[in-house]
Image (tube, rainbow, N blue to C red; front, side, top):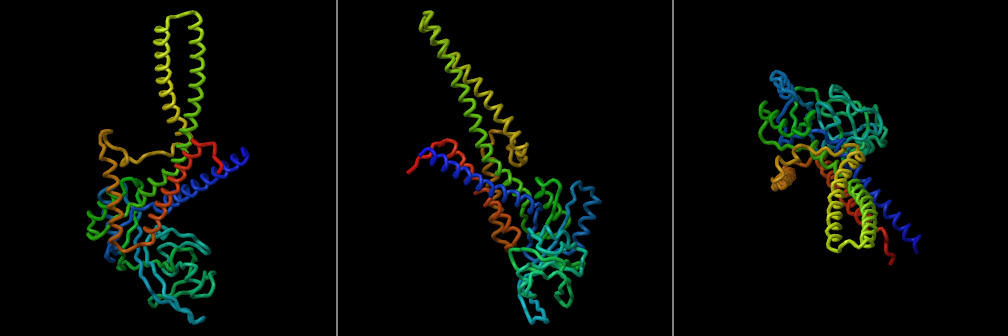
Length: 372
């Protein structure tokens, strides 16, 4: 029976590690793929020339953190055909200018990622490629879109059947901007200033992906903190028991030499109080120091998550309401694949890490598994 308990405990531990691994994966996925502040407009109203003019203005003003800008728009149900095989397909088209990797998470299957200056190339999703060419190895094939031919540079895995095209015409209009800042914590305010001071539209919503992705990725180390705190607590508890045993031996010696009972009780109370104080101080300091080393200083709370004063009890309520308002704003704009994937990754990361943390607490506090 004891061997069965140990085996079950081992299996449960592996399950916790697996769940925590998934949470860590989604945290890293969010941090790696959503590094921009996104601007979502109701209609395509910004041109490449508008953006270039705004960037020049930022340089003239001496702005310290000038963003790297990617502009794009998505057109649904665009018709494509391949006469040689007499195949047709209705696909989504993304027209962009800037860094293609900022449009959505992209996994390259074959070929290469193109730049915005490659006005004769395109990227296609593998399922779309199969529908048109009956093969996913479509690099080098030619697509015709709006009377212009595009050579397929690469095939990707995407969440939808899509063709991605670089558009170099200055007058082409876009409805989405991806702004990448060095100081991502203040990205939302920088984006607001960039849009307002350069007159780049009024009806838009800002999705602060870089901030939320960084924040949720920190939850991946929560199970480590839970485990570390428990192990340190057990270590100091054992030390405290040894000290209490020593006190009991001292008590026995004091009783042997017939010290008055009242003096003995006062002595023991003082010793126990001092023991608790020393234990608390050493335990707190050691937890902080060792866990910082365990996580390689991964816990760096953004300034926006730290209240200006500890008595500001409504601080985190305000931050939660801001996040909820962001989610509500997303409901009133057209759904964008990048934003959908980002919030999915955030929810999954938080869910897996919370489950792993709770399971860790259960395992370390109930090491003896009861068999049915």
